[in-house]
Image (cartoon, rainbow, N blue to C red; front, side, top):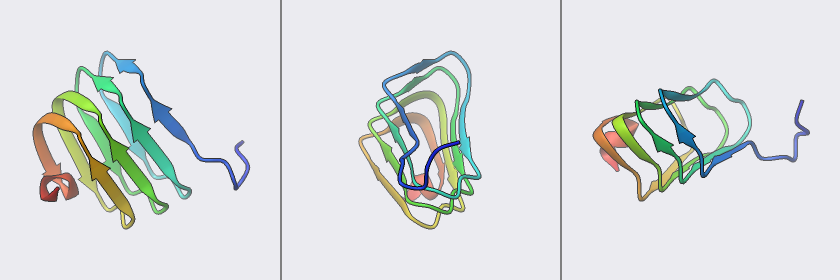
Length: 84
């Protein structure tokens, strides 16, 4: 279990399938990942940072009230991510 002052971080990794970051109450950062499939970021209520990720599939974002984004690439941007 992480303490309330820690920041879950997913960064500089390679994923062979789909990367899902869903249903987190605290802040999350998804930074500089390479994803062969889809990158899905949904229903996170804390601050959600998505920076410099590359997905060969779709980048899908829904229901993240505090989302920030920059420098991501994907085959298709969907949901909240389509607006960036």
